[in-house]
Image (cartoon, rainbow, N blue to C red; front, top):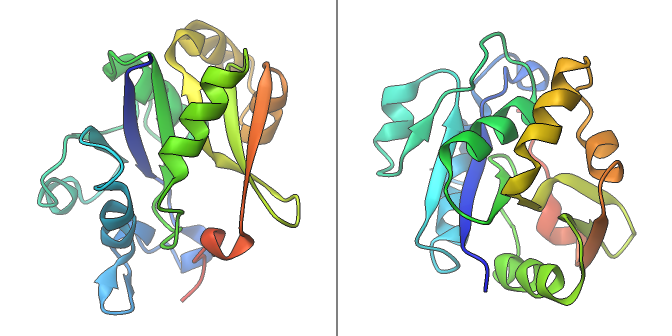
Length: 182
């Protein structure tokens, strides 16, 4: 049995959102990150937030908040490396802060696939076969390899995922509405 921590990725610049902190943008009378927390709370009692600005506001949600190991908005992979550095779990479920409809069985199905296969990373795909690269369950033991990948100048999550032993789990595409603009 694997121990699993959940980390919500909320550390981006929000370029496509007019440089607003996406996790804190209001959507249907709630901040985007609150939608994600509400979906994850029944699935895990080990939720964490990765943020690079507005730390006090993120801390007010009542979960541990971590800032990227390197400043300058280095991208989701830097957030993932930061999570691997702080977590003690065997694996980490990563979920972006701007996906308010994540599946209620996301962690369960991804954990089942991790157990069923010898994958190092399990990524969510939708029923149109689109890969949602940052919605993934990743073995924490990949920390060294990810650090080297970043040191080599690589920043693309999909490229990282496909460089590893990868499995996927299919969900309805409606769960992955990505709120990227006002």
